[in-house]
Length: 325
Image (tube, rainbow, N blue to C red; front, side, top):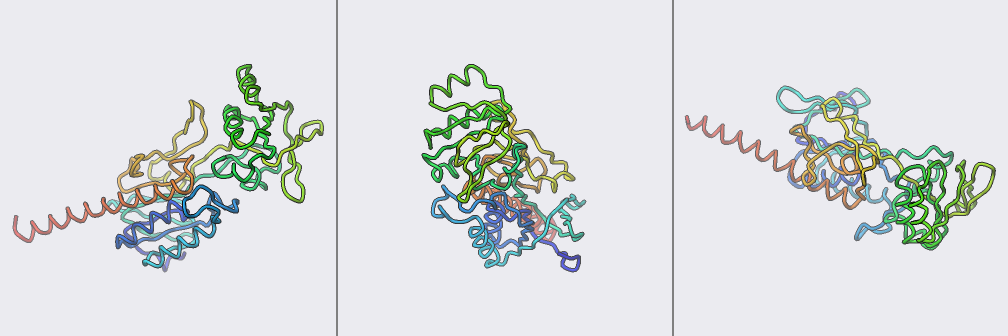
């Protein structure tokens, strides 16, 4: 974007993933002027396919987003590449969104669907295999690695739960103790499920022509596996909201911190600041693509309703003024 193209919209959607595009589509069909600012870095870009999305199972994330962009622009929405880095609340209640290239755009309302960043354990080689055979969600990838040898990397309190979960897809599940100290109760549970425990710190990946073949331990031993399960830290991409006074909160599961999010109403996505909504993984780290898209739709409906209410108030005030009331 450049300053010559700066303009004003009913709604600026920050983020062009499933949540952002679903929200934008709902809004343009509601006859709103909509701009989507898309950095082009969706969280699920490393994955070749999506799964569990009714009617879209097996589709590539890139193909889904391409369809979504075409649908949004087909109804008159605008999509611009770029990164929204900050937003300011103006005296009249509207917003000024600042982009990385120095340009700005104005919006009556904001829908932020910037997603999150998966922070992986500090083991060399994980990032290169992420979304392929280094995994975290069995509902996304479990079927594809069913009955194969699966290893779970224990570097936090969720590892035993992950082993318990992934055991549903493969009886050949191994827990790599790595840097985590297992309790006697943990070991009993794993033994009862037939999950093997291997001691020793993991130092890297063994990769062959067809992908991951094992995990290397300090000392050189290799533990066979065709998929490695890790527990990333889910960090909300919330920088654009910082200047608006909307900080992130710690997300806990079973009393354990797993990441951060921007807090919002669980139904509408409304934040603590009027005029700003969030949808998708930036507010709900465990949501899959279908749920993120649904959140985008619900948030967009709430945004449109809010705009209608504001427009109605102005219309009533103008009517009264004209009638001399």
